[in-house]
Length: 573
Image (tube, rainbow, N blue to C red; front, top):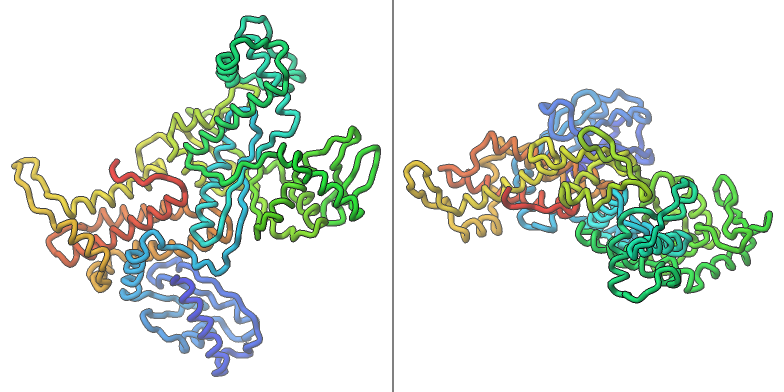
């Protein structure tokens, strides 16, 4: 990466200047940190490093520091200028050519990490109750988690994706009772859900259980809906909801390696095992009939109940066992995506892991804000027990590509306003359309390079600029010296292509997906700008070849980025 290259050059220049005694009082033992940025004035250069911070130890003025370092730089394939405490760099045409050559050689591997800091990561997300269809909030976690998994894999990590099924609580009984009411209604009985708001919370009155009831009766035509065991209804409704959820996830290009049942966790004895382990270690105490975990010993703001006075476990008890089990399965790092309302839950889970002997720093929790769905300028409220806007509804309205991209294009800790009308629009205002159109335009140019051109007025055909074999050979055996023909007009576009490598690295390290969205927007903008100002296929064969190689590099980079986001790359629009 060019940023890393220039940073290493400056660090080497600092050490050489210290040895030469030209950096004032700064010595080799003095630590320092520098960052590479883009100059605010593009005329100054392509990259810049501010060395003013070294004045604290060097005890000389920033311009003197910058000049002392610059004197020790190799300046091979780049030029340098100093403005105040900034060292500015301009890349050579040779460096630009190397970038295009690298993209064309690496293809789908362009931008991938080297795997030096590879970890075995378990990424858990969505993990919804199997009590109904996904709402659009679940859609954000699904898109974010899936894209993050793709990003981390691309960077070089070994990533496994898991969905934790919350199927052990009272909500499953509520689901079974709700199905019974729907069954009774289907056979003509005059029953309905409670109208009292408090009592109604013990049911799921959404219409989505009506087709489940119809299916149950088709499969069990002689059943007595009043006496059929509740456990039968619970299992049936849960299985139907799980099947519905899995089908939707698959349609959204979200893949889980494992669906982990909370109920199975309890049945395995792992929950009681961890409870006993905490008891044996002296981390539990009894108060008012309940058992409390001394989580304050590990940084929590208060101790937590893990077994109620009636002997039942709290949600925390199962979560302790579940996260311990994740580590026991051999993962180096755990990443969970939770809703922002679970913020206070992090400390207690980490406390329990530390008490059990695990490294709590190996658990990362990404807290996500909710989605506001905006239709015709009005916000639509969501909820299982009221009129509900489901993820199914959203995808049917705007499609998978728009759904995923919009869910991913803001940082996870920011509330997202999903403008459904804008997401459907085929204009540059719609970010996903803008990026996909850039990809389609790239593909159109490459097709035109090998297709005959028809004059619509005369009907005459002009021969194709080159054959498919010639284009393939141009790309697969690209002569990087060709780029010199278009380096002056394509510099900003090529630098944006080179930036992809650092974007991937920083995005993976910071666990951010929106930065990939921002990058493809900028790359699309640079490409559209280049295309509007430069004729790609013309009479100059070498210039045409240079620009076709550049166009293919744009195609590769866009595809690699959109594949990470889980967004399709249409060749025609």
